[in-house]
Length: 390
Image (cartoon, rainbow, N blue to C red; front, side, top):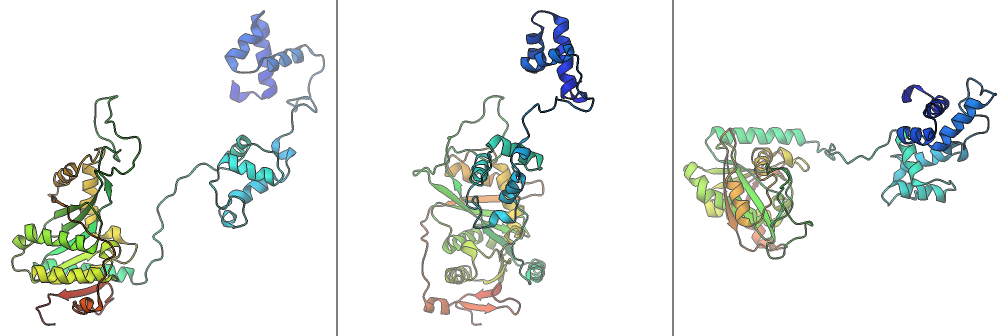
């Protein structure tokens, strides 16, 4: 009946129940209903009183403390100004650079002259329809005007190469992982009440270090190769991974290849604007003796690169909930990744040291035999081995 009775009806109903129980009835009703004993007693006095409240009133005139919005005029407007998505970016706002907790909102309101506590602020926010919200990834950032045209160019280039029997690979680095008994994302079956115990804090173990998986995905063969580095993700590391893939898998599958087509994103070790990437691609061309044709995805669109959803996603699924306790565990988990469609993966450790910040001289850059394509030569280009004349 609680939802059907107003404050006066509940008070008098509780009083009637207490009276029917006799001695100790007030305490019994208070324990059973959660209504305070003083409220039950007031209900008893009202039952015995000769004067009745007016039918439309719940309390007698003048009873009860005025509500917070009545006591603090302008409070709701002041709270709106603090939390409104437009004005909260104002540098003059007292909460521009702080986390907006109930306590800090209450403190800011008190500085504005309102007597309010954090519980009241939280209650007002709830009444306004606010709740704690996490960020949601939806924005792609500024979209390049040639974004769709580059997608079409990549599709045409890749399709023509596969139709001609030439190798096409997608390359990228996977997220760096801490090595050790750290908490792993995801869940894995285990006896009930006996989860795998891991460290309480994710601080890098200086002895075990970290792992940097760099992958090569063969689009036509649905086959992948990953090198697991231990120092830095650099253009040298990326190219050495591609060379390893070619020596172990590529040249056996494509013995008559003339051109290797690579799709890559536009950042990190694959950044087309860096000198080292182009210099290392020349080394790749010289080492495997093929023309290297590269097509980059526009900035902010790397998730459309095939390796992301055809290879990396399945690796993440395979090691979910499994602490990456050693480099051997990481390599074995990568190599054990398969799919119903036939994906096969191979992995190896690359323990070489890769230094950041290596400089490429003007002479070294001039030696790169590069031909930029007619459409967006900054994203699409071919590098030939040094011994082949352009």
